[in-house]
Every structure is written in C-alpha cells, then in structure tokens.
Image (cartoon, rainbow, N blue to C red; front, side, top):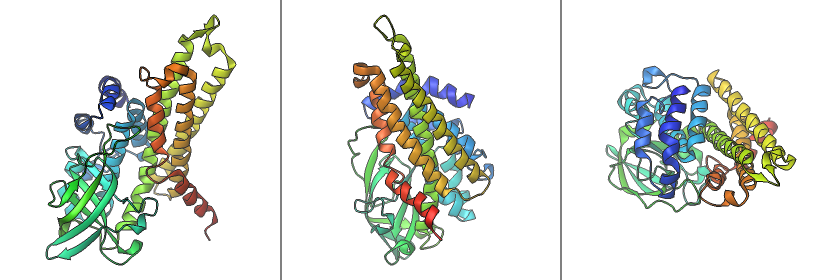
Length: 366
C-alpha cells in the first residue's frame, strides 16, 4: 500500500485535473502502474500476476481511485478484461497471452454492451460466423472503456441461437482487420477514460482465440462482472474519500461569522455522515472480497457493495459541493469533478436498479 500511495501522491494526483480537463488518455500512467506490478495483482503468480488476495487488490484500487477515478476505473476494467483468459482460457492460451496481459504491457477492453442491450446483456446481436480457421464478426459494441486505446478486446458475440446459451467470447487484437474503434463519447465526467463504440465490420478473429467453448460467453461475462462490481465499489469509496478529505480541509480553513465553518453543527454533521457512510461502504466491499478469496459465493454481496458504495459516493460528493458552497461549483476545486465522476458509477457494471434485482432474486429464489 505504501508503494501505491507514493505513486498516487507523486504521479497520479498532480496530473489528474489537467488531463481530465484535456480529456487526455493516461496511457503512460497505465504503463507505470504495470511496471510497479499493480495491473495483475489479483491473479496467481504462476500466471504472471501478483498473487495477492482480492481484498488487497481492492484496497490498492481504492487508493488509485482516491487519486483519480478515471485511472482507477481503467485499472478495474483492465483486471476485468484479463479474467476470461485467466479463468476460462486453455493452458496454451494462458501461457501465450497472460504474461503480457497481466504485466501491463497490453491494455484490455471488455465488450459486452450494445446500443440496444445494456442491462439486458443476453439480447446482444453482434454475430460471429465460423469461416475456415477464423470467426467473421459483424455488429457493434457500445460503451467500451479504453475503446481505441486497448491492445486487446474481449468480444461477447453470438455464435448460436437467441438467448444466453448462444453467446461466446473471442479475444481480439487491436489490429484485427474489421475491428474499427469510433471517436470517443463526449461525457459528463471521467473524460480521460475514453469510452467508444467498436464497430465490427467483418472482423476476422482466429478460431484459436475462442475462450472456453462456444456458448460459454454469457457465463464468462456474468462471472467477470461479479468481481468487476467490487472494483467499481472500491473506486467509488476512493472518490468519496477524496471528496471528504477536501470538504474537511476546506471546512477547517473557511471562516464565516468570525470562526471556521467546521465549528457549525450543520457542517460537522455532514462530515460525520460522510465518514460513517465511507466506512460502511468500505466494510461491504471487503466482506465480499474475503468471501471471494475463500472461494465462497459472493455475487449478492458484490451487488450490495456496488449499490451501496456508488450511491454513497454520489451523496458524499453532492454534500462536498454543498460544504464548499460557491467554491464547490467551480473548477478551481476538485469537488465538481468528484461530483461528475461519481454519477456514472451508479450506471456502469450494471445499473444500481439491476443490482437491486440481483440482490432481491438472491433472497427470494427457491
């Protein structure tokens, strides 16, 4: 954690505001994190990873998110993108791809959503047809984090009939003919974390890039999302922590009516609620991570952590803007950026309404 904090304080925080303002993708920072061994922490050493418990990885991710949400989300997405090969790939695929994937030399992207199938992921329509030694893929994947910058793409595509059983996972290189990243979306927040549509216009992916078997794609996608939701929860806690630290510091320095505003109960109650909610969210994601580390089912707990942490981050960043008053609404302070960054965390990796469905089903299924 000391290494991570040093990197965040020395390399990440000083760059965050400017690069966000310019919507500049932080590719070199990903390389720096990779060289420090932080991009493959959660995977076994024998596969080229760091061999760390998921609990440790998430605490590192929280610290990166405290420094810069866009970078923290990027690390989470990269870790998610390594999952299909690490958990479902053959021994040959793991030996061939994982050292570079986990070492940070290659940056990953995860292509599940489409324009018409976001929460209803099983309705995706991008189609892959076997043609000799290749799959030929037509369609488009939407909302792809790292789109246009990634070195490899996990493509969830339809190789069979309608529904979950017809979906497969292909690992495609960025130079795959017919894989065409579109211009990045113009977003409310996390502008340096580029999100783009990937058009698949007869993209030819070698058949040996099929991960698992045909029809395994939906199972791969859903199992990956459980761990990915914990990553988003950790980043959300990091953003909220940064916002609370800013609000506390400002409240102690800002004076009104002859004393610091931190002495007013209306402000201290806001700060107290922030601190309590952050600790609760942190405890939730750590409980889920410990279940995962012990090989226990943790899907509902991952959804609870993602739901609570991201709603909490939205509330904490809203209250931080309020504590700063007018100063919270201008770009001179990071409060407005934290506010904009928190909003999307309630949406991606499954909206918080979807998380409630997952949690409810876990309680009521027989």
